[in-house]
Image (cartoon, rainbow, N blue to C red; front, side, top):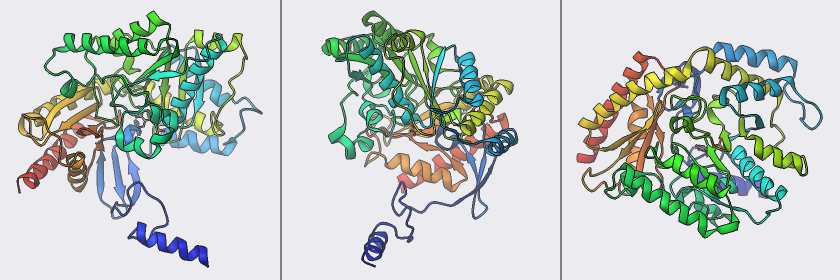
Length: 453
Ligand code: PLP
């Protein structure tokens, strides 16, 4: 009874709707989801939403895809789980083979979430250095505006004040590199000068850690923090070269950008960069199953194979037969339906439409991104480039105004700015893209009316 009392007391305080479930935002009114079909999601009251952000840039095939559902049902009837310490599974072998063939990497480690895969990439890199007799190399470097996951390693890499603060006491300050975020950090430099500036400062940062530096972790196009931050063209190749000169692994966190989202299989390919490790998640399971992976280069695995010859950590569900079969079906769909090309094509249409909106809506400070990962920087004043007051308020009103009109967009404030992501499923058609743009136009008009009022 005492326990019951305590629970109900905290429940009343926390959640006005009386729910026991701890949710993302306490007390916020959200619709209950009912079902989905293609790019549309329906709530329990029958309202339809165009999923203009693929959930959390995840549902790359749209919802309720019949081919995926069939594979899921068939695999579920055979076997859903077998521990990989006991059995190999044909499904995970095939998945690794397919991923390798699609991306050009020889080895694959399977996990269940982006955060787990980011941790795994850090751990594999640490093991790489230990096996080579350099255990003190434990300092990673990442960008000051970035998001790499909710676990302690991922958060240590992340430049995102709101997400970091609760765990700050346990985190490393890996996020020390100047972000390739021209709108707020170029300070009048053109692309070439900004690239030179970023590269020089990154080299200084790496060298300041000397023989403690372990590797660099980068989102090729930023996602959840800042909103589709797109580096100047020379930057990623220059960063890769800095790493190569120093023998440091470059780790691309392609959890959001990977597997076609930006119009190439991996976003790093836009700049012909081949990272030593690549982290995948989100679109790999496309919302049908929690699955993620680390793609690993030969020399990293060789060092481990020449040493202890085992990877000492994994996750219980990693590589389970059900998740692997579903992810394999997702990858097959990405290939057989030419979705990478569709992302590039529809990405052009979306980008042109967003630019056109930016010409009419003062709240849009910048349009940026690649393929179907587009971001809008939102500003309260286009001249001073000020974000909302408080920061985050413009993001929130854009998300709400869009939702009220039946459009889902993703909040991507980096803590210092306001931004949303527009990132529909890779299956989106030309007509659906037009509808998305029309709904967004309405939402932005409603927003500016509120701001003026
Ligand atoms: N890395 C990047 C680039 C992400 O965008 C995210 C999630 O938004 C993560 C890692 C963490 O992935 P998850 O939420 O699946 O743990």
